[in-house]
Structure formats: structure tokens, C-alpha cells
Length: 197
Image (cartoon, rainbow, N blue to C red; front, side, top):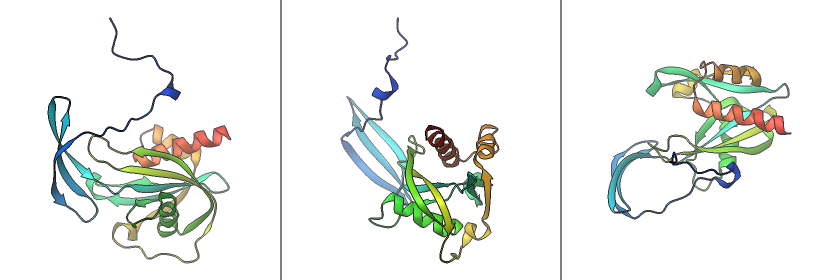
């Protein structure tokens, strides 16, 4: 008797795209930032209906200064009723803008910094059971002040910016004090990247 698992080495495994027949696709809600869709797909002999958030995607930045401190922001997020700690991030909402350029833009807009070195770190599906968002996380180094500061509105007007040692950020993630998934993924990937250099 088997438990249904296949014995494979990790380098052979990968997420696999699937092109199912979409029987119907309806816009349930049109929002300012993202929409909600209801789709019915043919899955083998069955038809499955699923609702999900249609998301434009996003880019985020683990910005490390010369002392290996991470540039963090704290801002109010209404759905969770918290001011959570995050890394600079934003939507891929400029048509044709590559994710790395969106990351550069967000770094300048949110924390008034530019990076001499910006490299892809990791891309993740944030909530594959509920939305189609892919967030591309970049590692930024050799930071300098942006040519001008940006005006911030809404939740961003009260944003707090701190530089925190990478090891302290990882400790906070592991202790459950920082629960933002993009921050956690980014700093853990950054630490591993540094370890491998």
C-alpha cells in the first residue's frame, strides 16, 4: 500500500500550467484595484465553478543597505485591521512595465531610494486558491537616496520606515511578530541568497 506520494528529487518537480476549457467566465465585481470573477471549467468529466480575485500582479523589494539592514515599512491594512510590517511593494498597474521596473518605481515611491543593483529573488503565487496574483520579489543593494521625495496619500501618508538587521527581521518572522507573507518569503530568500554567495 502506498500513501500516494511519488519519490522524486526536488530538481525534477515544478508547478505545471494547465489549460482547461473555460465554459463560462463572469465578472462578479469590478473593483478599483482588482476584480472578482466566477468561472466554470471542464475538469475531466466534471464541471467546476470557482470564484477568485483577478489580480494584475505585483512587484516587491527586499532592499538591503551596506550593513545588511532591510528597509521595512509599516502601514495600516484594513482587511486585517493591523499596521503590519512589509517590504516596499506595489501593483503591476502600468501597461507594459516589466516587474523589475515596477520594483524600482515602488522603491523610490515608498521609501525614497534607488538601487544600483537590482536582481530577481523569487516569484510566488500569494493565494492560489483565492486569487491569480503573482508577486515578483527582487533583491536591491547599493542603495542611495532618490532624487526627490514622493508625496504619499491615504494609508501611505502615515507610513513608518525602519532599517532593521536582516537577522532580526528573520527572528521576527519566525517568532510570529511579522506575519506578512511577502516580507517573510522575501527575507528568507534573501538570507539564503546571501548564504550562497
